[in-house]
Length: 321
Ligand code: PBG
Image 1 (cartoon, rainbow, N blue to C red):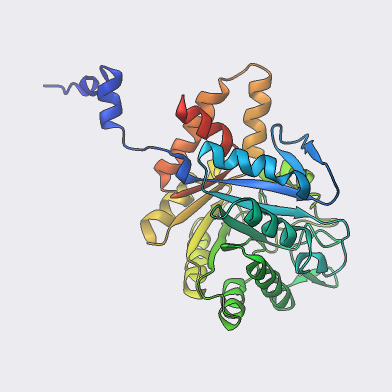
Image 2 (cartoon, helix red, strand yellow):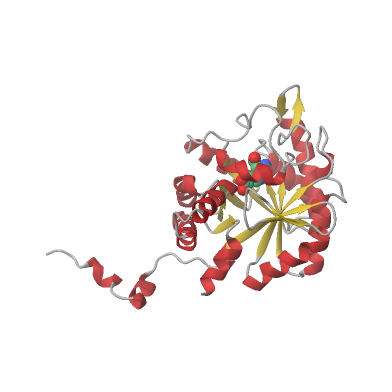
């Protein structure tokens, strides 16, 4: 006799009762871009609905974030000056450092995560220090650690290194511990792929490499076992949370990570994923709300505990409807 699986889909009530995956505002982290200058709230053309904020207007978005019920933000800074070693990234009065202080001023308990990388700050646009035309891993570590420390000093709750240097989590954990920041956690961009989905972000953050690409440090999209090695290294080095990035084309990687490791797994639904949906919605090709909800539910279903997404504000609003 065949089985009547449709019984459990008969009405909305029963469908709600048997739903396996639920997304809530507590799952999401919202990325925010901060720029130098005054009175700036400028829409990022590659990412409609996202803005560059100057510090004096940062409260507008932070208030919105709190209003919709989000718990955390991730801050990205665009400095005025770039140089060979990206010294703006670890300046105690750099753009992100001031932004962290500002957010803390506006909100006592919003969770603040900072992205640790150099590509927005170096004039060559690579994520580390160059030796000739190569990104030198070990030289970069010293700088990466200093950036993380400067974020901790101004009040970041969690440090998220996205540079993909080997040994960066250990370097960061060590410098944080040595300076009394034992309770500041690390969310490592462990399985970060060399992805075309970052295109709109690089426009938003003005962080494209000026020559070559990031293939010598970011991962080949074809590999999943390698992602597990990256994750394992980061956990051993002291990562509290590991991340898979991008999300949508890497749901299998999220699932493997979830099944193999017990640490929380974050997924970063990146700029290209967001921009594609926005563009298709603008043309009337898809139902934006339904598509965005489905995308984020699938990331959670794949095993993500935390989702970093440009859709965070919209999702929170839609979830309330
Ligand atoms: C910095 C960084 C990038 C993203 C997050 N941190 C860009 C890159 O690695 O090129 C991408 C985020 C997105 O596309 O939304 N290294």
